[in-house]
Image (cartoon, rainbow, N blue to C red; front, side, top):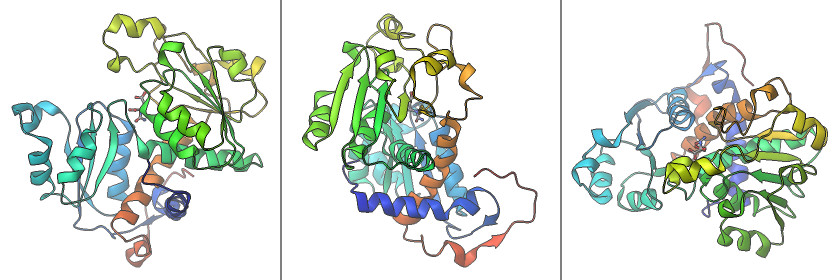
Length: 327
Ligand code: NCD
């Protein structure tokens, strides 16, 4: 995330706005015709993997998937260096997710084509943060506000939650953000993030009280306990279900029109259920607007990385089939 400044973010968001007719299937473009995306996900993924692939397809390119570690030579002991040298011969851009922190950076340094981090262990998840910030900006501007002076409560597993890490870094670039960090003390956000946030002049309040934490916020950003990052499953179980947001908690403690976000997947099993299904009809629940925005942001990233953001319209035409409107 530290590669981005506010100017770069504005560029991504402007490109994302221009992708709406394509993501809505009103227009199709062939701007990436012949280009190949290497979509390499060595950890479980639904929306990140599929929306990167969909974004590339919507720009007219082909997608190759490497889904599981056991189907690639990394399982035979091949280094990231060798794998990157090889696979970058077969693709124009690579998106990679891997469970080891820093793995994507190591891979990128040996790759001959641009590499996008689709999540490296508990470290970072920058494209998620960009789509989250894009969503935040839209949601708060509909409510007459901006990202500067934002009040955001981040709730849950802030220690291992990579989407939270990248979002905090991104928000640090704005002015006077008020962060409320709601987590059990053992799952609090790392000091390095908090120091960066405070160092940039933002107010950071840590709490383990959900009701107090959510009561004066523009945005609630709820997260799942990242059970796959814990040393043992028993330890992860201890933290599930500690903070549960549902409609009655929301009605009682939140200001009207507080926006509810979650990177997803939400853990809907009874012992966790951090974001209850009874919020599904709440118009302030933005989780599926986040996932839709993910396509726009990922199309924007591809078009900027490959320097075709201003050429998308050259090969575009209206579609003739029936299309459901998404945006
Ligand atoms: C997140 C991830 O994988 O880090 N999900 C996502 O990419 N949308 C969050 C999570 O898994 O809890």
